[in-house]
Length: 594
Image (cartoon, rainbow, N blue to C red):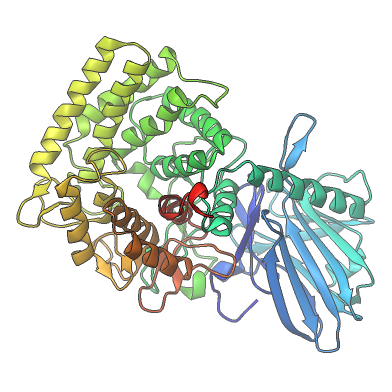
């Protein structure tokens, strides 16, 4: 592990767990038994939990994903010609008619040159790095136990068990296999399991990528983004986490440290919208099941901004003293108090996510009258709340205001219900929702348009801007050629642009003025420029953001506009969605490419 953490990391996972691996092949973050679990490996946040494979007298390393997969290959070289290749992945493939994605990390270490000597440091912790797990050994496995009721992890391996427990160095003659997963007996030879799981997982992902409808330009960037989004989908329920990490600060020493291992209805809508545009429709179907279970459960229409990945409504926030934080920049927070916030845009986000189901003929389960009736109570909430104060999409923890974006999303919910009703032949309901949509549109147009600024404003009757206004055309509230949209884009470029990046807002909030740019806002600006016909400037800005990705093509949530260092939780789904959307918009068409 380097002396200072960075976000030059790779993400591996399978829809059950996710892990981040640094350039030297150390697992620096990994939660078990799922995304929101206790991190067994937490050195990213200054904790003691480690899973390292060290090469004696190592002098350099290189790293890459296998093409079109989330399988990571790290090569370590020593000073005398010795070299090893570490292949890391979490198994994911179809087996016995269903998807097999166990709580398991697979690490295969192969000699590729010379006479390498390696040491394995496997020190999983529990209670958020508060205590190291105790070990008990079998003939070819090591069990790692926490407190009495904690999850037990088991490493099954063909490496001598004493080498693992005592962290002794040994000469690697061929290939060593390490399977870290549940406390269950592995029935086959460990090496055979490793080879089979690797082959099946590679084939699964390559086939998944082959089915994507990608733009002609920037194909590798879009493919990596799509795979990364899929790694943030919790396969068991269809929930989509915003990121697999917690408490990586939005800016150095800012205290803006949040737990993103939850499903935000707004973010998830953007994710499934992006994947659906690429043809990955199963993610949307899984997510719709998650949403409808939430809507049907208890107080059906009072939606929270975020939920636990199993649909739990509670995400109580607390500070963990056992972890010092990313670069010692605490606090480390577990849970997210934003679940208690009032954010009215969630009603529109839920309806917009469901709208696909009524119109996309590729889907196995299509939308019908019954589903429409289940969505109508959400529309009623949107119609009732569109002009009421809320915390907004940026989740301000101070005073509530009437945010234009929330109002527009409420309009979008009513607008889509009208369209769905017309599609289903429900003329009376279509007229009902059209009246609501027209009323909301009129109020927003009157109260959020600021003639002096020649722009829509962040709040009704306000005089400040925020970057969510760049979405007005994509949501259908304004047409691309509406002069009010062009004026809004100009105003945002004037007031919120810093260098090559767009800030979400620039006013001080609960933590002072923002220091870094929220990456997805720059993608929204790129899309807006493209919609206005300014393609050359849009392409230049897009190439600039692409150059800011880490070595694996991944993006965090924020970026320092001066140093271009990434900050915030990682990998951020919002940012990867933005990349996909901009690439689709900007790319030349396949039939014009040759």
